[in-house]
Image (cartoon, rainbow, N blue to C red):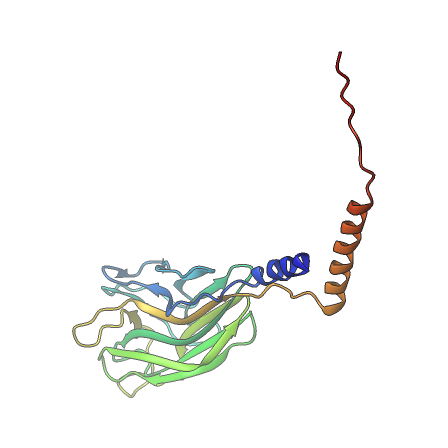
Length: 235
């Protein structure tokens, strides 16, 4: 019976305890020139790696302090900002919130979609918002949890060709992403949610039976081993 308890304890130990983090990844644009090729992820939670915040192939890279900036928004297939996470083996993630700041020039995108691809699946629109004039827009975007086993990629792209000033997006019209800084706060762009270790496979009842039987056979064999007597001869 002690052997059975020991085996059960060992199996339970494989399961591990769930780990979580409110902030999974951040992107800090403080001091960035705006035209940098990408901004690397920071404050990355255990169990995953962060994708860099970068532009799609169709966008140009104008400068814009404390941001990553772009113009040339025409086609969703090539004209977007991309960011996200890759999961390490043995982990899953559930993402439900993004904090970010954005700003358009007058002829930049006036309506923006936030898209997501989970585990390399098709992109789906999970949020939309409007940019008005040249005002900074700071948002806490919450959505139904996206649960992934390998990756989540987010994209920000123009929803249509309407510009922030109500006209049509121009080739030079810019759209930038910056830190979430409402009021006196200044928080890097953040992907929030939970990351959790995957549970180890639990043996089925038949497997447990075989393990117990094996322990019994080994124990019986040990009891049946002949005793070896050692004789010591004295001169």
